[in-house]
Image (cartoon, rainbow, N blue to C red):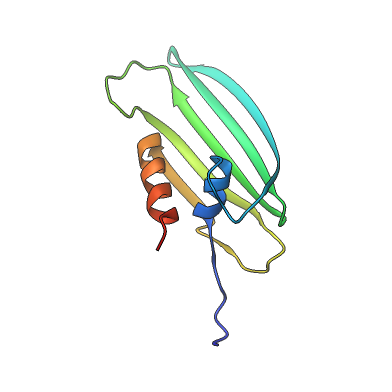
Length: 116
């Protein structure tokens, strides 16, 4: 075996966050919600920090506004950031993932967690 570092998929952790089957066990979560007005439009932000049994810590930030939209998948901003890689010694990759709507997040998750 080569000396290459084995990467751990962020998608597997995101799957656990969404309560899907995952090799990673969610140990704790904390959520903070805020809102503010931006040019007369309410903006809501939810920041959740997820701690896993293996020591990994992932932050998920969702920001969306109340601007009326007829889109089936309205624009919002979803960001996952790895705050701690955990005890395995293998880095979680990618360390940051951004989506501009929930449909793209769902597609990415389905693609990266589908059985091989």
